[in-house]
Amino acid sequence: MICVPLVHQGDTVGVLKVYAPHVNHFDDVDVETLELLSELIAAHISHANLFEVESHDNRHDTLTALPNRRAFEERLPIELARASRHQRPLSLCLLDLDGFKRVNDLLGHPAGDRVLRSVAKILDEARVSDDCFRIGGDEFALLLPETEMDEAQVAAERIAVQVASAQLGEGGIAVSFGIASGMDLDGSALLEAADRELLAAKHRLYGRDS
Image 1 (cartoon, helix red, strand yellow):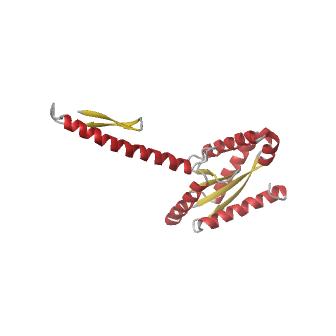
Image 2: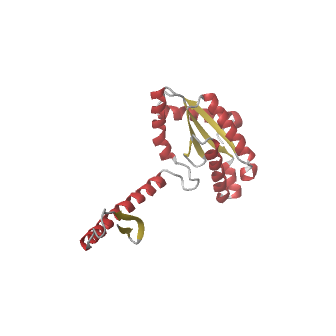
Image 3: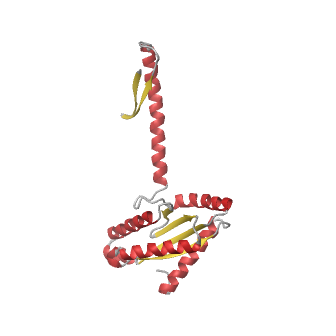
């Protein structure tokens, strides 16, 4: 057996092992050939790892670690197509933090960042099978496959209670949400429907956007 480390720019990314059925099967030429191959293989592995990291970073929010709007816009048509193909329900819930501007203004942006991270943790733990995204400053989205409108309403209300109970931003943070459901809508129509419901919820509570 010959073992050759896979090293690229000083970093070891793996080991190349080559086996032979007989003792003393390999000679110096074989070793030299494997060393040359190892450099090429190491470079490819390193580039693949770098691409994977960059792909993850491009689709995740650095503050909350949730998937970002780009990831949401890529995932939404996939889930809609799956729901339509299998004639299964799909709901979209948009959530907006009420009182977030006040926290930033009175307590500072670090406090606002802590609020966002805490809300992201609540969302991420709410329903393991669902995807949650940070799609704007204090705006979040939940994609709820296999979920009817009434079930999505229950899930959103539970999240709102959890956020209120967490007393974030010295108790000044609440959640408004809007829900839309439909397997036959396109992504834009579903998003617009959920956004209308979110705005209507804010108007009912505050008489204006908050």
